[in-house]
Each structure stands twice: as C-alpha cells, then as structure tokens.
Length: 281
Image (cartoon, rainbow, N blue to C red; front, side, top):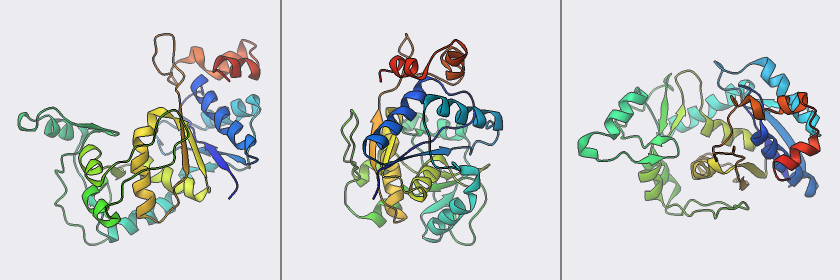
C-alpha cells in the first residue's frame, strides 16, 4: 500500500510551532517515501471548534508549502461511522453506560481504602463504578465505556504492541497491564457519539493511513488504539511519535500562546524556511 500520513488538528485556536513541526514531519516523510499526505479536521469539540480557525489551518499549512487531496476529512461528517462502531461493540457486550462525573471518579479513585489513584493515559483509572449496569437493548445515549477486561478476553493472550519508528521503544503491554493501568476508557461522550480514541482509529482506517505521525504525548494512548483496531478488525498502522516543541521553560506549546502562533510569525515577516529552522528541520 502507498505510504500515507496525516495531520489532524482541531480548529479550536491558531496553529503554533508545535503544529508546524508535526505537519512538516508528516509531510516530509510522505514525500520522501513517494506517498500521500492527508489533512483531517478533528472538530468533535463542537463547543470550541470555529469555522474561522478551520480556514486559518488551511491558510497556514498552504503557506508552509503543504498540499493534500481535497476535500479534507472532517470528523463532524463521520458521526454515522462512529455510531455504527458503537452499535457493534455494544451488541458484543463490550460497552456499558456510565453516569459518573469526573468528580465522582476522582473521589472514588482517591478514597482512603484505595490508596493513591492510579493515573493512566486518560487520567485516573476508572474504578468500575458503573460496570455492573445492564448491557442489553438498544445502544443507550450518553457516556459509554469499554469493558477492558472483556475486551482483552476477546482478544486473547497476545501482548499489545505496535511498530514504532520514533525516539521511544514500542512497549509490549500485557492484558493485565491494559486492565490495571489503562482501565475502562470512554468511547462515547454525553455530548458526542464517540471519543478521541474511537474516532482517531476509525478515521485512520477510513483514510487508509499507513503511518501515524504525531507527538510523543500520545505515545501512551497508542496501546488503546491497537486494542480498538483489533476489536474492530482494522489494520494497525506504523507509528512515529516525535518530540514536542517546547518554550524556553521546557513547557509544551499551547494554542493560547499567541506569541508562537504561525500567524504571528507570518505577520512579522517570517518565511516558511524560517519556521523549519525554528523547529529544527
């Protein structure tokens, strides 16, 4: 299959130097392999996504010299696919409804008898409060969690691993490790029929992505994505988790850091080559 990468920003603010590094890395790797670079707009956060930020993303990336097949895939157009995947997982008894708030989870996880809360890729590992709820009938509305123990039983004893070409070594996570250190992750939210984990796996498969290029902050979430890929019969791409671009204090850049927004550099007369130099390319 042709080498295919993607850049998948959220239109919730301006692109900064960290975004530029990720997009340029994915684009350069695709170009070097004679492959294709794709853009995906991850606009599942409807409360913060804005059309003007989406337009700015296109403008900034084109200014950097990047191009991709149009139209770019938008997650808000993919709701039926997410719903179908949830229906399938629900019918297999792998999901359950969860009514816990973040405060409920934090309090349960930090109860005196529990000791210090175990922190996983999504924060405190869910204590299983709602795990015993009924799992029959039509797919319920609201938050849904993956029963990790049932998922691992379905997948069998093989370790969860993946091909990694970045700076870190791909782990080999056991079934017990997924249950104990990751836990029952959210696959559907109250305000959206899906979650980051579900949508990114389905969208990568739909776009036939062969190599996922993204920041090392998502490295620990990758075993979750491999589990979902195996449960849904989807291919597992190769992964390349790159370093993060940080400020002078070692803190990763955020969209609210307008001083490092690409639009700011452009307004000050920077060139695309200047941006490449700033991010070490």
